[in-house]
Amino acid sequence: MTKQLGAWNTLSLGLMVFAFFLGAGNLIFPPMAGLLAGDNLLVSMFGFLVTAVGLPLLGLLAIAKAGGGLVHLGRYLPSKVANLIALTVYLVLVPMFGIPRTCLVAYELGLVPLVENASQATLLGYSLFYFVAALLFILRRGGLIDSVGKVITPLLVVCISVIGVSVFAHPYAEIAPAQQSFADMPFGQGFIDGYNTMDALAALMFGVLMIDALNNKGISGKSAQFSYLVKASLIAAVGLTLFYVVLFYLGATATGVAPEAKNGGQIIVAYVDVLFGLKGQWLLATIVTLACFTTAIGGISSFSTYVSDNSKFSYSLTAIVTAACCALVANIGLDQLLLVSIPILIGIYPVAVALIAFNLLVNWFNRPHMAARLIIGVAALFGLMDGLKAAGVNMDAFSLLPGFSQGFAWLLPTFAAVLVSVFARSEKAALTETA
Image 1: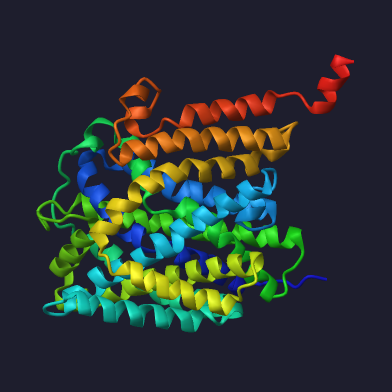
Image 2 (image 1 turned 180 degrees about the vertical axis):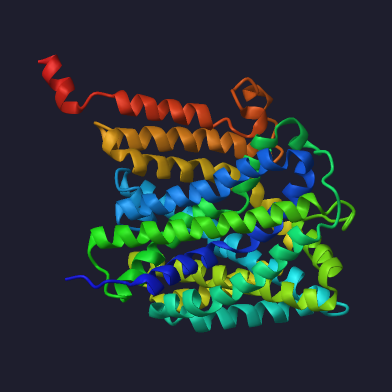
């Protein structure tokens, strides 16, 4: 008989997932989007929430429904294709971009404002300390709910609440007119900016940690796991939504606070300095460090679980090597990492969305193997076009595709593939009619 998790442990599971999501992209993109959205704040924020909260929530529900990790989501694809997709997502999210980015954001927002003459040597020392400290938690594989959900995240929530209340009580400036793409397509630009958080991809990665955490708590029945995963996912989604509302409003009321800012992180630093002075920088350093640190713990732990489950390498060895790789990549700098990562994210996101949609709708398909190949294949093809365009490759030959100029070339073809798959006859029916 499976155990009961209890209200406190269920809340802690949800807070653990919230903390895993709340990383670098969640901090640096919403303030800049809010600043540029201006008087189109609500429409832009809604578009952002669709991809930064809605898709991750659906991804967690897809994981819960499938009852397995990222590879299991591709169970109707050829095994080599499913493993290739899983490996690509994990590599992008962990050693290549996602987890090194958490270290860089924690460094630039948390440490740099507090020290004088930060240098490359400072970054090197910080990154080594950051990932060694993360390993201390990662190697305690069975204690993530207790260490992250019950200790780190409540402290993080309290610190965020202090800034959130202050921003709404004492906004820096009036909301200005919308700028750049937010003036012409506020919903669409917000939707695309939500990609940059990486959270829809992260949902596919963190799902396996949620299942692993439940197993360690004695929750082994599939129906019981599904129930707790849904509850935890909703808790995380509510937390993320409130956090984004605060940061969007912070950005929208930040006109003039940091006129030379290149990313949202610099806006937060300047805004908090105006509100609180030096004490605010320590508060911000705490928030940023905890937020990024928990994501690093979750990401490396999830990747190590995936590798150890699908190879001869142990969990501990994989975690140590991965942390070392992340520390190495982190030393290239935040701006350079963002420049490289965004086109890759735009290219791979449609595949993640297609995987999520397929698993949520799998019971509607008469021929699930055909549906998986068609839906995910179409999303991958058109997502590649969007990614190449974002990378600066001349793709004018495809400019007539609906949504191509906005980065949505994949959307309508993928939706059409879903419709074709829903209405496709089963193989048995086709053979009967032929006979």
